[in-house]
Length: 258
Image (cartoon, rainbow, N blue to C red):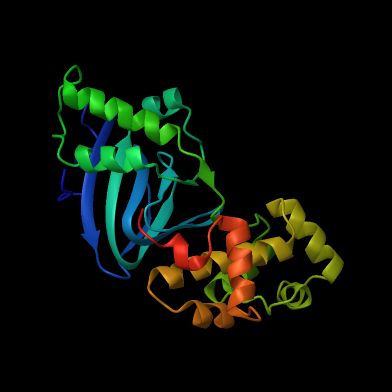
């Protein structure tokens, strides 16, 4: 279904409705929520999603699960073709979909199901071919492996503030001491509280945040070397090594359409 009027799908008595729409670079959905859960698949382009708990980056050909009634904002990084699957809450619970945002991989089968589902009318026959297609689509979404493409935000207001500042200008050159100074904490207090509120060290978080920024920039076509040096890596090869360790592919292969 080509999305024309926002949220017209919310009250349709079907477990899933799929929409598709093209967006320009920078298109922004300010903080909002949906009555249904949302599986947003980036058929092309990169998406970023922000919640009170952190930020997520969705590379091309991957998707993100956003639970129902979770306040979030979403922005397009470069031209984006977005396929949304809106899932009723009871169906999401039945399928065991998580209660927090999660970037998910997308299998070749799921990509084909999404393409087919775009043409399924909103009030499809549950017992017919369309109903079975949508049922398989839901099960395939629920079966997708999670990808670690987020930077959690601490609940401590001081830490959250400096982390948001970092995300606006990420760099490996921002040290623990500099972050502690920004947060008006001692180094020891900062490191202890950071791990307590995020579950990881600041160094791990910094690397993850820089990686997410790199995905956004690479997805918009910026050269690997330029991205690596801008984020504080010593060389493009050092950046490529870290990228592959965390994502399983070097940057030049990660954005190749399957």
